[in-house]
Image 1 (cartoon, rainbow, N blue to C red):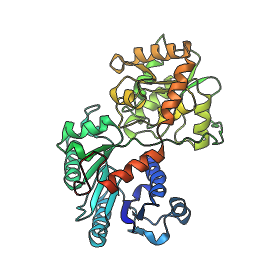
Image 2 (image 1 turned 90 degrees about the vertical axis):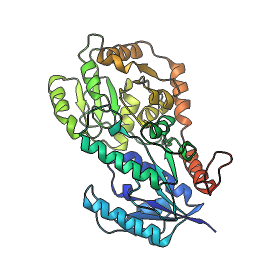
Image 3 (image 1 turned 135 degrees about the vertical axis):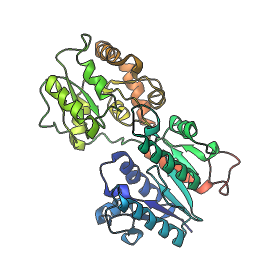
Image 4 (image 1 turned 30 degrees about the vertical axis):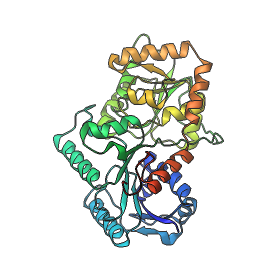
Length: 374
């Protein structure tokens, strides 16, 4: 008889947080052979989506209202807690950092991606830091195990809190290996060669460094810089100013998968000057297409790219980034491109789902820890 697994599927109704939605889209159908899965969601999921997830409509229990970042979100979590405690599934999985209710006798697995607000990369109001600290402490006290996307993220849990290290499991997400997506050129793409970035347009991702690097003498001339992704509200004024002053800078906003494919295939190089990540999928997606990849020289990017990508010293700022871009374009390395592609190919959703199944069913993949320890 299958064990029961309840999953918070709220991210499936919210396409904004793409990475968490993608984890659920890829993982739920792979686990359906091993668990009786019930998707809890704020709004009912569409029939076609449930079919792709291999979930019968009766196994989607919906609260009935949008659970936004407000009191509605807290009420939704209270409703989930009531469902979990009353129905007592074997397991509950939360993909989005926080466990805001007590799961009772159900064993809860929470995926903690990062504690960015507390990392000190950029200043945040004290009240925001306090809220994250409080929610994180509650989550760690209620969760039976934590799943992190990287060793860096695993280590971060005990940089800020205390949690049994044997109950924190590293499970890197997969990436889409299919390369048969039709590519479509974005209509607003300027003519000429370009460098490409996709992700959140923000200080966090180092976009200010990339913009400043464009003004350095060592930065390649006659090449555009194309940004794609949602613009963080705090960064919007800086981006608008940069777009006015840099005619070679282009921001496309959110793009389709077909446009994304075109940009990955046609760019001269993929630039990812991030200051902080819990993992970092876009450089791997670029590497899968044998696109030259330049990332910041920080521990998480070294971990994810296995030390094979091109790097620039983040602490040296925009001048170092400009020089690294110049050198990357001037000295192509086909062997490194092949090695980076092989690295990207090692991240699969099958491996992610299998590791998650082991964590749930066995309680631990560490010898000597059984289900009771979970």
